[in-house]
Figure 1 (cartoon, rainbow, N blue to C red):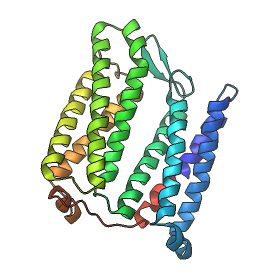
Figure 2 (figure 1 turned 135 degrees about the horizontal axis):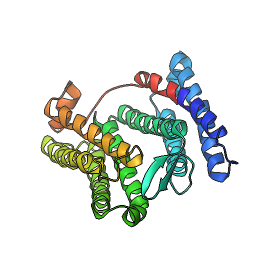
Figure 3 (figure 1 turned 90 degrees about the vertical axis):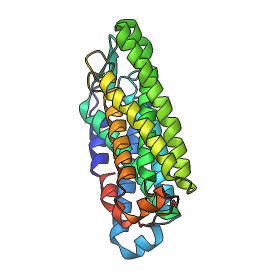
Length: 276
């Protein structure tokens, strides 16, 4: 709820007259506020919790919100729209920090909620939500790098241009590998060797992505979508690698041993739903 209020205030406060894309983002933020309030109440009231939490209703609400935010975040974060970000002389800049950061926060929390609700309600692998986050960060990195590549190559030196192409490669491989991991978690096929291979490859790619992309000669040297997506992918992949090497609980041990089952309920998502 808190993040939705901040997003509503930021969109309303935009200096230029709101157009279709801004109005859509405002509508999605309002719907998220209503849905977040309702789901928070449902976690508190026993009768509502039994009807809504931990079943197809919760999954449907989370999935619908995510679908709407996918479109809204594309409108808000695209430099071509000049709403939260822009590109000047091949350099991505943040125009409106509140809208930039809080729209990303609510989008990523929505992705996490979809991952945890589907994981718990359908007994997917315990790392399903982490893989969905990595899939999302890879999409952000790929889409941003592709959209900015031409202008970066026009205005920046050859080194920065080539590193932008590396960002495209990381995003593409990250999407493919995390998609495989998501499907393996869904169908209970995530065995230890497969998880080690995927997490090892992605961790290495994102580690060198941080080294090359966020350096002074990289396209992510300043704060923007490339900077945060490559750091986010590096963090998530590193945590996945640690979880694979040092499983923390019985469900993770079962998954890396070949059993993809996981238990859980909806109560632990109450705090995240309050943030919507």
